Image (cartoon, rainbow, N blue to C red; front, top):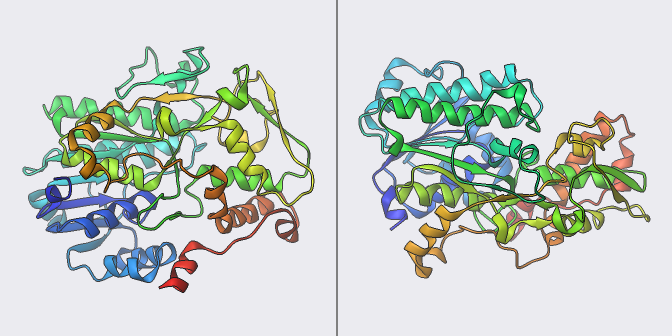
Length: 424
């Protein structure tokens, strides 16, 4: 039932050459027969091909490049809905598109709100206004973030903060609420503006906002371990721990037993893709979490233990917890960037649970709706050592460490794409 929905559909997607977008396109092309997929990419087909070639093995790239059902359109996002496309292209999309997926986004967490208003807020609102004029539109999908409501950590003083699949209004705006990054507030504001515009157009039933948590490598699709170098926060954290020369790393929390109470919600990218596509096919509207959730999130102790195994130094590094807030200047740079280390969010996923129950076990076993935690987390890090090593090089350069230090401190592995090539 899920994949049949996409047969003969016309789909338009921003961010189709990114981490999540690539997984979405692979699932649609490999499982269904859409009438056409239009992908917006700056630089057009040649740029898209170059990006996919770096991420995917030949047998999977072939699905992308040989498909007569996909067109890459040369354009870019801005503060208008034109996307640098011609009037003819814009009118064609307006006449034909059934499903509009806005997956493009800045991932610069600490960019200023002013900068993010141009890269997240304005493009999202403009595309919403444009898409809601489509006569055949069935669903407008906005890829937001589970951390769009991370300010709740400073409001709800419990050690495990529940976040529902709903829009949270603010009593006052940004300055009055403690978001970990401007990025989180930009996503929060964009969500509210999308819903406000849809309400004005009496089209709330056409809006699906999907909130991934920290996206991680794929469990299965397009291939196990599929990832990109700079799209998985835990990969950057593993690199930071590997490079740390000392014995202690300063972190902040209010939890009394951080190893057990602090959690990290990392969701495989194929779980994000399948939740998007399943909820579109099932007609879900409103907000949906694409997360590992209470059943699949990681305890900090397990997460940290996996990181320690990636260090080559003979001594271990221990987290030193303080009651500082997540903006403290005393924190290790890893915690300054990935500020939700030290928190615990219980992202609710009732909408996915209900859809899974409706579909039944025969259909859900062919889908990736939940993270696979049958292997220890260290298994995941082994398969992304190449990317950890690349991130370590970037960090070493930024911190003015000698280049040879990366080889001494950080384990190295082969890219999984190369391994796929060898096995092809």
